[in-house]
Image 1 (cartoon, rainbow, N blue to C red):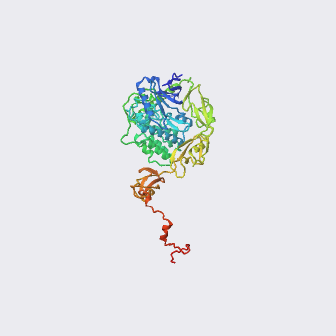
Image 2: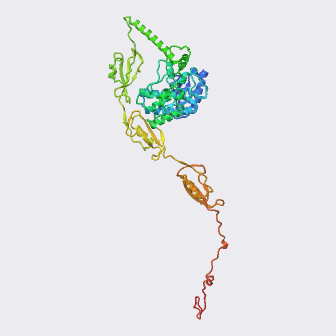
Image 3: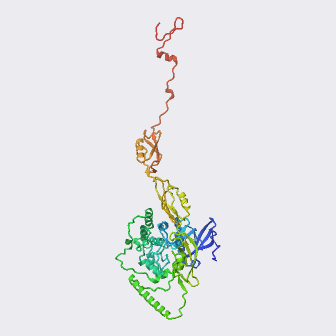
Length: 614
């Protein structure tokens, strides 16, 4: 049992179990008692903790990854402050991309596009902060249950401005994914990560690596000198544009690769929108060699072997390579061919000698045949299986690659050698393709659309990161999907949704409208598609019908159709009238003379005449 289990780091992180190990550190599942959450804690191995160089590298890693915060990068929560060197990270509920590919085999191009786009987004974020991962490989890419991707283990990342070191100084990367400049020990930059990401994309599309070999050194040399088969040469169903993106990322000439992760993302996005797009370069251009360099100097074999032996999963290198002078590649290949012929001759002679003995020993080592794609009956009838291996079915599951009844997974794997006492091959058998029909999710709220897709029970990976403006579809609703309505869906397919951002808002720049006539201000707002609202007020300084103030400050930006309120002058306020100057009301008697009415006495004292004489 690990003696670290149960320990409490800094009175906060309780180590519960080992969940991983690497070349420099052990990774534990731990409980953060302060925040009551599960975390992953990476602790520098005890045999390296006394090495000042390893401690320095471990601290560099801590400082580098602590600068990163992105959905496609494993988050770092805390770093050690005491004697024990450790990093506290996000605990991922998922599997590595390597494990995912081992389970599914060759991925369909939609899955590969979904995963590589997220990988490149994470790398773009890291590169923008001057950090190169330098060890991109499927083992360092985590697939979460929701289909999202996180890049893990920036264990050999460092600031781009830090002093560069050669391959002989540090074990960097993994041999099947390293860039040519890493293999040669040259200076690396962000384009080295792009090359490694291209190899990962190649492996997802073809279910094989671009270069294989009997030793790490031979694989490294192939990165320098060989040209791999294109994905379409292996699988003609791979879209041509995606193949071109993959091969440009993997260009051996660093100057012909994508210059930045953003540039590669741009082509990936263009391809996602239109799989038939025609990119402005050809694979032949990427392979073209400069005429000024007819030969290539090989790195020192002794240094390469010593460097590769330090990797986390080192291949066996049985002989130490002696230092040789740099030679041209053709001469090196000729020498290798001569040695191979000699070895073959010696082996043949040895077999001839052995054949002269009557009592030849019984064979006890057997190479495991490739049973993938066969039925169990076909496998049992194979001459490489008869009387040597026993085939046992231990399970079955749906497969997009193999028909029902065909073997989709075997253990031990093809090419392995087993002893006489271990001749059983266990297999998983396909139940056929689990499929369904794409429903109509256009104009559905994107979360409701995702629920509809998950209810199909096809383990679909839903990519809803693409957004577009739409005058017809409300924000947050689905504009279109790929595959489209009515198309066939298979188990594990990636469904891409384009989500509406609503109508594109056109902004207007509000100008200064004060101290100008109202009519002129209204005309300016009308030209900018802004609505004018008017209010009036008295002003001692602003002339009548001129604008006193505006509700939106000058140089502000407003969406077209917005309202700007203007306050317009009525001129100075008029003083109230003086009460003493008002006319008093007149009595009837006063008004009588004015109207020409006269009252006269009569004999009886009662008669009156209006305007008449007696």
